[in-house]
Amino acid sequence: MLPLKGISVVSLEQAVAAPYTTRQLADLGARVIKVERPGGDFARKYDETVHGMSSIFVWLNRSKESLTLDLKDSEGKKVLDKILSEADVFIQNLAPGAINRLGFSPEELKKKYPQLIICSISGYGTDGPYKDKKAYDLLIQCEAGLMSITGTEETPSRAGISIADIAAGMYAYTGILTALFARKETNKGAVIEISMLEALSEWMGYPLLYSEYGGSDPKRTGASHAAIYPYGPFKVKDEEQVFLAIQNEREWKQFCENY
Image (cartoon, rainbow, N blue to C red; front, side):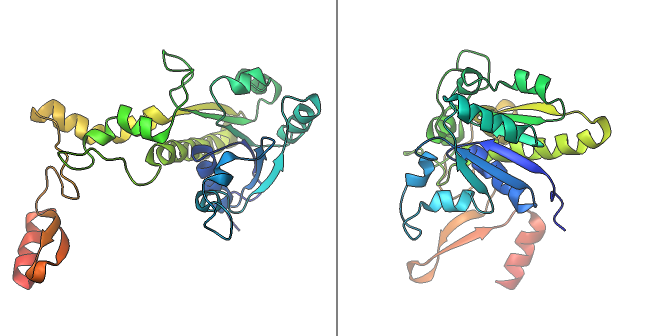
């Protein structure tokens, strides 16, 4: 039996971060009810490559149930409230402030459903000067500093996938699992807040330490590594390219003896 069988998750979700979280929970056996706005999750229309469906939507939304609710309408609010009354977890990543305006703020839900685990994913958190700013993966990669170490010396580059969204989704996923574990002992829910900027900034710990204690920032070195060698692409006979990844003296000795 899958470990989250019997756990019910309701997610008011769109794009990547929250859908990535709920897909992970669904893969572990949770029942995930994806709530979409009228017109549907806009990620449905990113492309039409998978038999007419968006590749990123197909990747993120397997194993879920889905319904559309107009939460600006009183009947839509009643339906969401009814399914939340039977849920273990509620997740949302709407635009800043939207969940409060709809009447489903984490504070109100905590009072109403004390055993509910409530997770909000935002771009920049719920306080501070950027709290009302919309977040996009490209901007977060810039603001967290990832693009300062990605690409070549001449050309900074974004990671080829939505890594800021995925980072936030993974922290939301582990936070929810931790809260479910704790609830077994306390019989109480939890309120979890995840921001994309904080999630990706935490992943930048190594470059920060390198800069702080090394006296210089890591350089953009393309597919090579700024501090480890040989680690990256190398031209060989006939101008073919191979990639080497050697991280210590023992591996280097084995490489030289065998090749």
